[in-house]
Amino acid sequence: MAAPPVEPRPAATLILLRETPAQSMQVLMVKRHQDIRFAGGAVVFPGGRVDATDHALADSHKGDAFKIAAIRETFEESGILLACHAKTGAPVCKENADRMLSQYRADVCSGKFTFGEMLDKESLIADTNKLVAFAHWITPPNRVKRFDTHFFVAGYTEDQPAGHDGDEITETIWISPAELLTAAKAGHHKLVFATRMNVERLTAYGTVEQALKKIRATPFVTVRPETIDTHEGKRVRIPREAGYGGDLFVSNDPSAI
Image 1 (cartoon, rainbow, N blue to C red):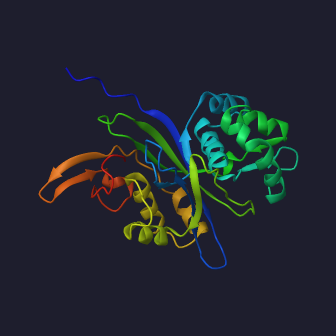
Image 2: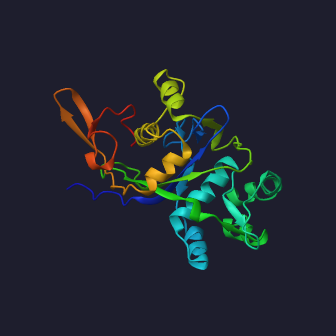
Image 3: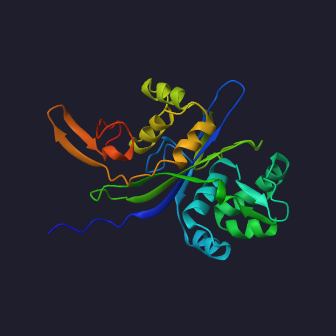
């Protein structure tokens, strides 16, 4: 008798978009350390599991634990903090971020401080209002590691620098979606299936403003990828109505969605 499928772990991912004088839209990506078991060496959007501290902070702020996890993970993995000052509502700028990066980032990553404790000490509020729901993917039931991942998108206009920690994350990259796909096809970057599909979706938008406007107006459909046999070989099937331009796709990395 087959064992029951592993329960998927709640997770959240943040697709951070910015505009530069040279390019109308760039996305923030981070490269996972080669030795990490799941998607090692892959270029991904910042993100990770939703933990108990995210739920506690969401309860105290009447917020969304998935959005808080996406903001927390982005801070831990890239150093960029989507938060605003509680009294003024002003967003965190480079000067604030540089100080908090040196004081808190390692402590939050290690668990010495919770993300919520850091925000309280600095009189900040996680800027969850910036986040727009983009996609929802659930790992197939036959996988050893399964995630129930909510993808959010947000525009970024502040001046905080992105930087990797050299441990879990070995590189942070601002890059246009089209350039990322080209680099991946040339073998310069590794993209797991879900990341590649969502990067391809981003290429449909010309600017950050256009992307946010259309994404807000588009309801998302939960994606549960399924590998099937076809006359052309194995393909990954997802719902056509999810908005990825079809329902059957080749997976470059069959070991991960």
